[in-house]
Length: 117
Length: 111
Image (cartoon, rainbow over all chains, first blue to last red; front, side, top):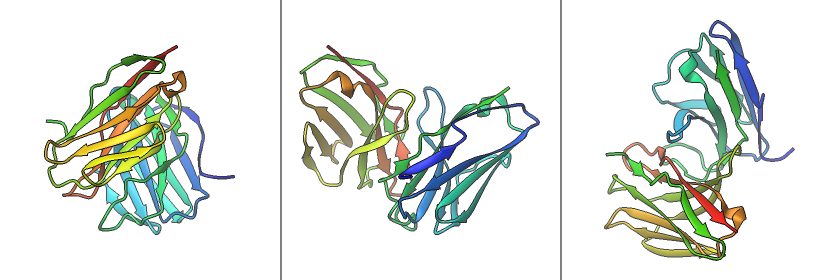
């Protein structure tokens, strides 16, 4: 496989469920990101991992919990979500480490479409 | 004022015409600017980046940057129906280093 792959592509969950989104990048990149894309809104940065260390938590509610076991894998654990959390969740990676200077050259996965009932 | 502002459109142009997509940004210190294309139901894909004032051409695409006026634009020459997509402008913040996206402009190229 090549690029950035995300699973599942679609997820429907109740507010009391616990689920996880998975992202894997096959590009040898050093940084990975979670973005949220809601209708009619700009992409929102949620979390950034650089060499598997979290370098950014963009004031995301604790019901979203990221995990980065290595530079190629990224998870987003979901629990007690709200209907307003329904959105497209995009994983991205970049070659240049997201350290003191972020890069804008991101490679995105196809996204996980989440619906919270 | 939004950090990165785009007209959401839709911008409709006939096939073969030049499509002009505009973006303004509020951070005067920003140095890096990006254009992403997002087809319906797909993820964003980087198509152009520009760091210096002036024009940068890549095939049918030209990015234009004017830091004094704080705008960046994307021109698509000889527009094709396959160019129909949402185009996202993104700017790296000089304060936080984060990549800030605009809302996107939807382009429709009619055959």
